[in-house]
Length: 127
Image (cartoon, rainbow, N blue to C red; front, side, top):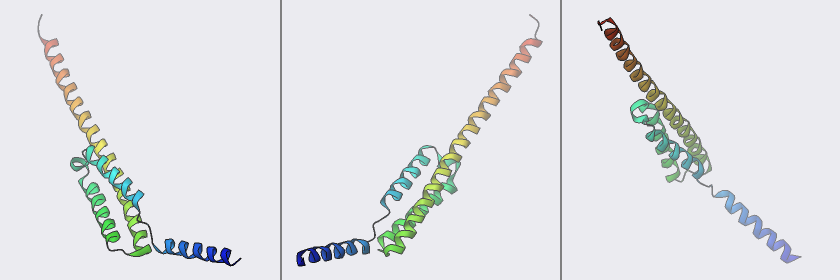
């Protein structure tokens, strides 16, 4: 009976020790870092520099909080910032895709205009 109580006490003490050591928001950091890298590959630097910059800044703040060993409250703040960075990076990637699509559309429109002018010129010439 004493052994059972002692082992139960050891488990409780062990669990409370784990509970007092907050875990870093590693998965949120990884997701945000991946989203930032994806946004960079989508050329967000060219099409959404403010949103990409905001994502990078929030990740820098989150890492700074974790490095300061700010405890559970700090980790919650770091997690919040990482989630916001993920959102900003996804927005930057979407804006970059949209910007590239608009640029391609404008180029195609310009090509159509040139072809149309060429056809009008050729149709006005005598055979």
